[in-house]
Length: 378
Picture (cartoon, one colour):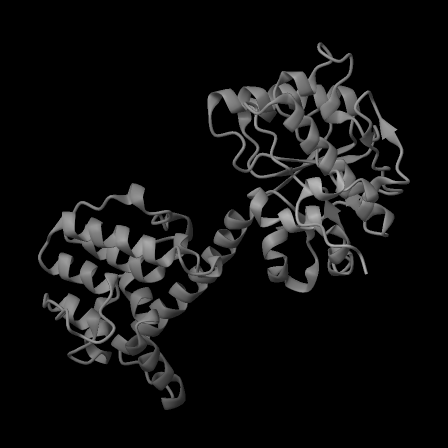
């Protein structure tokens, strides 16, 4: 059984992982051999949420907060069999902050290659992640070599991540400069890009190699949920219309429609789709949405009183400030839930936001991640 190391310095930055490695450059960065054939992933999943990869068909990547994958840096051996369930891995994206001391930036490049090398030696398909810091890491002016690109073969496949890395004009400049140097130094056949491909950075470089873009995990899940939401809303709208028009439906069909609307979740779908009449027909007098549509406040002592009830009461009183305060509280509350709940598509809040704006209230949409449903025809 492998000895446990609690911190990176316990064993001198995991030197046991690279005992048989070849090293590149003056800093002796471990070398990750290029794969025998180029395999482009079907998708990428961050290490911390890898269990949510459907069929384990994604490559595991580390484009997330370092704390989410620090355990694999100290206990790499424990994750080999786990990672073999996936088609491959992108080597760790240890953060290279441009304002960090140069020794820290170089040590993060070393860890990237050391972990990547070790996993490749265990039979795992590894794509090197290329990450650079300030210009000292991606130019040869200081050391006579570009340390950010050491330990990687030319003319193969590499990966870069823009997610969370190109938010300011300065970070965009550093990213573009480093990317240009990487393309000249490594001449890769394929560059995977995790995150957005900003026009300023990529537009005039797209003929230099084959770029393959992958949405970040939140965007990917949000887009998938939007498609799911679109289907549900369309079905709810058709069901509501059929229900309101008195279309003859079999009881086995009518009952779950009515019960679903009563339960609230589908009721808020109907509210988003502005099929309000049906809610009056299927909800009882104490249902929160019935209170909303009848412009009656929900008593605070009601069972399961929550931020949504505060939002409804604010609409009844036409109090925009109170509504925005309740919306902020809703966001704080739901952020404590697992990310699969995806506050960016919180159906309950979206329904109330739409209804509030329909009543002429001023909603602070900037506080909310996703309220624009125009992309799905609403």
